[in-house]
Image (cartoon, rainbow, N blue to C red; front, side, top):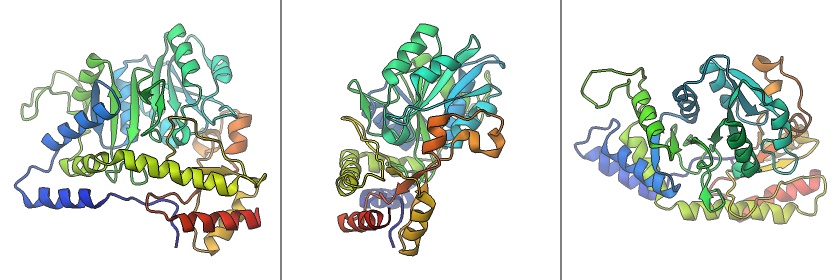
Length: 355
């Protein structure tokens, strides 16, 4: 049985968790979480890191703390996980969808320019499968038009642009540490930002609006969006060997590329220098048939995210040609950190036979 993806937390994480549980510790968010935040900020070359329970609440918190007016528009890629669109609704703002580029599957600058109005106040830019896309162009557009740039870097751990880790091009970067990610807490997330005043607002917002734990004086509005030290130990332990994890992911992707490069019916978008794939995505016209064939051979795949405008809750949005095409014809292939080369070769042999 070959899984599409599964968590690999490593022996160090198991050892550290057991050691922590055996000790007399608080378990809730405390010193281990503060330490992880410092480590992740250093890894991403950012001044501040604020942990959250998941990557949905990170994006919601960023939008909330920007204090945007209720009729403000937030532009989001049509090819992304539905949470990226949902947070706009959560924040009481107006969602607009932007098509992707057929060269990198990330937000298309040309279509973005068509969608921007005077009411546009923020853009959430998704780094699809670790690809940075044309974020330099997007960043210039945002600066020129005074629009907040938020990076949805849920897939972006280990990806760099201009010698900077993703998440540093705008007001803040949002990361996910859910089960299949390169670093996993089971569920978890983090925000990085180089704006220290904005970081203070985020910390207040996630802690009931109070400046200090144990003192129930609330001068600001906030929620309980804290995590636990147990989760932080898991993440810190994986961060310890993050370079190795990044290299494994790159090796997996390259192996698939090598074995599938002669098959003209399968499209793989390349990874540029500095990019780290979260998984392995392929695009082909008979994806449903191939998924079934692989499943019958105990090989698990997953459809790529459906376009946002194909979801029933967003059915009134217009079609966008590039994203509506690729999202209907894509599969995530097996790419766990512990997948074996012979398993990759087996998957590729079946794909080359039946596609």
